[in-house]
Length: 160
Image: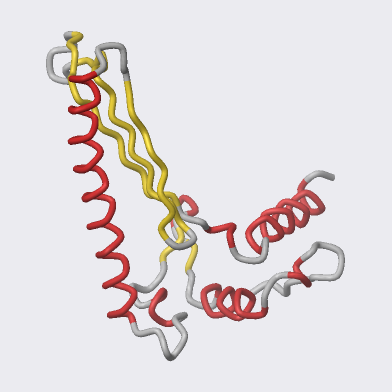
């Protein structure tokens, strides 16, 4: 495992929790063929705080999926009502907070698509797109500091 230098890179401002998790993770990663890194299936669970059991995490994740699906269905229903009542409306969309994350849904009245098996263009009505976006950078700016640190250390080694 490489020693992490923090003085000039901004990692001194990264939370100690993140640094401990990184050390735990790095010790369990293996670089294989073509740079593919493998990790044990239990890696995520091994980093959870003692008072946060994996079952609770799975329940929250399952609820997030159910929430996104429920939001998608509700938006589909609302889209149908909107498009029936307003012939000019082409789309409706929303973005809803889900903790540090957010779920966004877009419903299009219609969209031109290609049939993958025939290549023929066709119109798809009621095209729906749902995204669950992680708020990975939401906590104390750690993610941006880590991005900058990784880039800085790689630049110092490989740009010469």
